[in-house]
Every structure is written in C-alpha cells, then in structure tokens.
Length: 431
Image (tube, rainbow, N blue to C red; front, side, top):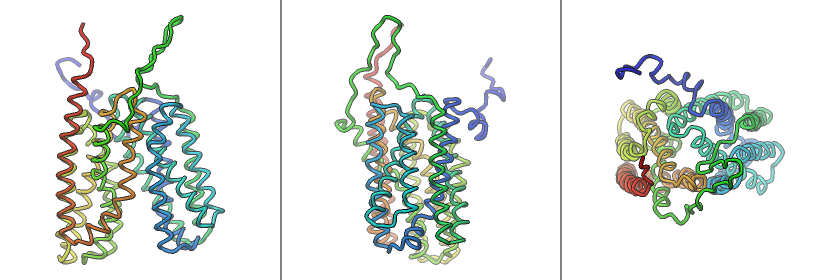
C-alpha cells in the first residue's frame, strides 16, 4: 500500500472469504471442515443422549447423572493426556487416533446395554472428545502462527454452525422416537468421527516451534529442555482462574433454562430461543470480536470485560424473578445475549492467553493443562449453579456475578504481570 490507503483487496474478508482462505492455508481449511463435521455429529448426540439413555436403554435419572458425571471426570484427564503425548508423537496421528477412539466407543453403544460397560464407554468417549479439542488447539497454534485468534474465530463459527445442523438433524430422529431412529442418530455421530479422521489424514504435520532443521553434515540443533507446567505456579494460577471464566457455558445450558422454569413466569417455549440466540450471535460476531483481541495484552483486557458482562447477565437473572411474564421474558432473553457476549470474549481471550503465557518449547504440555479449565467447569459448573447459586435465589446470582467480576480483575492483573516478565526475559536482537 502507498500513502496508507487501504484498497478493497486489503480489507479483511468476511466469514465466507476467511473460511476459503484461512490462516494456515490448505491444511487449516481441511481441519476446519473436519471440525465442522465432528461438531455436527456431536450436536446430534448432545441433543439425543439423555433421551436415549432414558427411553431406549432404560436408565433412571440417578444412573444418567452418574453416567454424565463419569464422562465429565474422564474429560478432565483428556486434555493433559493429549498435551503430554503431543510432546512425543505427531499431533496429526494423535488426532486421528482420538477420532477413531470415539468412532469405536459410539459404535459400541449400539450393542452395549450393561450399565457398568456403559460407564466405561461413555467415559472413553468423553476422554477422546477433550483430547481431540486440545489437539485441534495445538494444531491451530502451529499452522496459524500469529493469526491464531482469527483461526480460533473461524473454528468457533464453523463449530457452532455444525452444532446447530446436528441438533436440527437430531430433532427428526427424536420426533420419530423409535429405537431404530435413536440408533441412526448414534451411527450418524460415529460416521462424523470417521469423516473427520479421513480429512485429518489429508493434512500435513504442523512444524513444532523450537525445532530447527540441520544443514547437511551438521548435527541437528535440539530445543532447550522443556518446562513442566505442573511445576509452573504462575501458569497453574492462570488455569485455576480460567475455570470461573468459563461459567457462561453452564449459565446458558443449565442456569437460564432451569431458572426460567422454576423461578419465573416466562413461558417454557422460550427455552429453545436461548440456543438460537447463542448460535446465531457466535456465528455472526466471533470473527469481529477476534479482530479486536488479537494480541496477548488485548486478551488480558478482554478478561475484565468478560467479568463485567457476565456480572450484568447475573443481575438480569436476579431481576427476572417476581416480574410478570413479559418482563421476565425480556430480562431472560437479554441475559442470554449478555452470556453469549461473554462467551465471545472468553473464547478468544482464554485461547490467546493459554498460548501466550506458555513457553514455546513446552506449548503442547502447557496447552494440555490449560484445557482442563473447560473440563472442570463442565463438571463443577452445573453443580455450583443448581446446588448453591439457584438455591440462594436472586441473591445467589448477584453473589456469583460479583465473584466472577472480582476474579476476572485478578486474572487480568496476573496475566499482565506474567506477560511483562516473559517480555523482559526474552532475548533482544541487536543488529
């Protein structure tokens, strides 16, 4: 460009244009398609799993709860396990293995009826799910480089579109309601893993940071010894504080629907609107939000914005109680918008900080540990909301909002402090 003038060609492309030419080129484009198919199948299973275990397998509510709890615990182990293995084996092969593991476990559900075996099958599926997400994250940091925030936005937009497509397809099977219809939904999810594995096989293994190819006749230069994330108190503090920075997920999926049904006069038919609002806003706005949070310090600032936004969401939930049906409906829909806005900020800031705060030579292991925050929240978040927050009534939501806002400030300061220390310790190139 000359004179600082931006031409139409220089301007950022829209969502479809970015999907055609994503950061990372061909390999990134194939991986995004694989993630879309993966999440489409996951959307099918997420919409049908509880009903399948209840009406087809014949489990009671307690058994279903234990089953999902076991899945959550196994998922917590999936992220650090994937990060540990990614430091020793090719990411591409590990991701294919994770997809094939889930293909096998979902296929087993078609024939397994014993509860003890179901526990193991569902736990292995969840472990594979979390491992796959961590490996996808690591793949993205390597192929997208400094444009990883844009890649993350594209991945989330395509994933949400996949979830919506899968949920819509599941609605057809659920309307039929027969055992065969449920089995067809399981098979569709399993086949999505097979398709994802085949697509990942077409990608090339991304280059690991810190590895330098040796010239002919020279010994290879090895990277410095890797750091251990489990002994890095600063990074563990970030991961611990990142758990409450993921509570928007439980608020959207558990808090909003249950609060509407049990504590407000809003019509129950409003519940599906929460998912519609979330899906549409993420698909439409994620790319724009990521463009504003592309640097580590911007990501740290977005953490504080997350706390303020989620706090406002909690206030609206508290105010929806005791109001009329119309007022409660408006408050709950606005709360869904705010929770989604918080999710948009969190998805970029958490991703960027998890990468930026980790040493480049040990990024695989560090990102594996960082991935635990989402898994822990998925297990503990619903229990926190139903067992403490909602039991305390409107005051519980106010207290939760204030706590998240305060912790977000702590997270922002700690992240900025670590970023400053890392910048000060970085070698300076003198020409």
